[in-house]
Figure 1 (tube, helix red, strand yellow):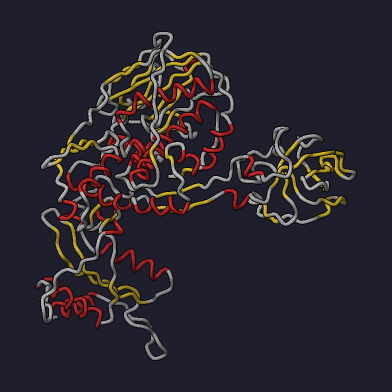
Figure 2 (cartoon, helix red, strand yellow):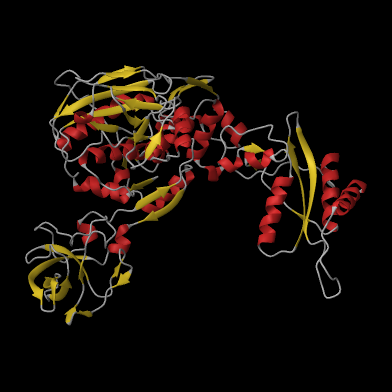
Length: 618
């Protein structure tokens, strides 16, 4: 999850430094994986004014520019950009400046016989976008000589943090700001979301046929929109977190997904036939997704479709056919709630990893369906104009209201940390929980905390905000004298066998307990299959240790080893039970060759029998 400091300050009123924020994030359990400030690599580039532009005497496609860099001494720059002209302002790199987009350091050079003392830069050369049709053109009021990063608002550190699967609300900047406010780094800013009044009835029906996969589906139409490029502030924010600006309508949905953890989708109404329905896909249906790939669907997958075809893999990725373009004038904004478990199953089946899937399969805030639609509508009106219809909601938004009986004393009992009751109540309140105090507290859980369902979870919230670093290191009690042995007879037997086999010159291997089903079939077949395997090659529990040892021996011999002697102690997974097993594998030559040995001997059944009998004797 990436976000900029300025983006965070939209939700958090704080004067904390970057280092203080990073330390607080890690203390809260949001590990900071990196902090990058574009100003560090672009700080040497300045705003310059092109005074004159003349054709290069030796090249028709080059121009010789006279550039005012702000120090009163114009410099000569050879430029091949088609949009370079006298009077424009752009971004200048002086000799000695490293250009990140090209990987070169500028120096004074002769280009076709004409000396060039620097470079006028494009967006791609500064790694700000893929645009390379010409050099950056700045407004006439851009201050000559000023640092470009300061004028363009690029002096904005970008945080990259790791989000554990149970902290789904922190896949939005708002959730991260709430954690920091609870940790005392600042104050969470309140955000009023006013309903947008519709000026006409919703003309397209929205219905749900798959209430299990999509319990709630809200939407409205905005007509008369103008879909051009999004404003600079929005484009800068998206680029800072690694997203490519596309158009105002699409950028709005990407912004709200990062800002509030609320994925949305916009459809071009002119490309729809009838209304939209959340239903299960039908046999033989497919969809051309926004990533340019066509996916075959099945009856287990929730989709959004009109009267003619599927337009959206629900909660994962939209379709290309109904996507918005520069000619779009009427849009349908969708804000839905999808069941996390079904989203995860569909995403795995199709092999799609999208930002929407990452949020929906962890569980977005169900209470934010309608507010998210209102936010998106207001942004569309502000940036694209238009006239909104009334909002409609199909289905039933899940009711997540629940209260947990909580004893403040459990913080000391479970975490060994003595936290005052008043501080515990303040921490939970700042995190959005409702606290009713008494002999046993009643704590209501906010709709965005799907992961909290018991007293121990509340203890965890208190401890991580109070500070895991404050948990005292307490040694466990230890009796006087020599500790009694704790190994079981079975463990002692395994240790004895392991030492014995190693003493006979065998190398111990540890292989996966999972196998490709085809390998398991060669050894009697797998009694147990994995419902949700890591990969197709790890879908069966091993009925024998030999497939793993064979694979290990093959890899070893492929690299030139002539003799392989392996053993493994592990479990076999049979229909009736798990069986602890010792397996031995002899492959290749029986022993190393030398000038006395003659032809290499190969191990046979008698060698295997000797090893087995020796192991049993031990």
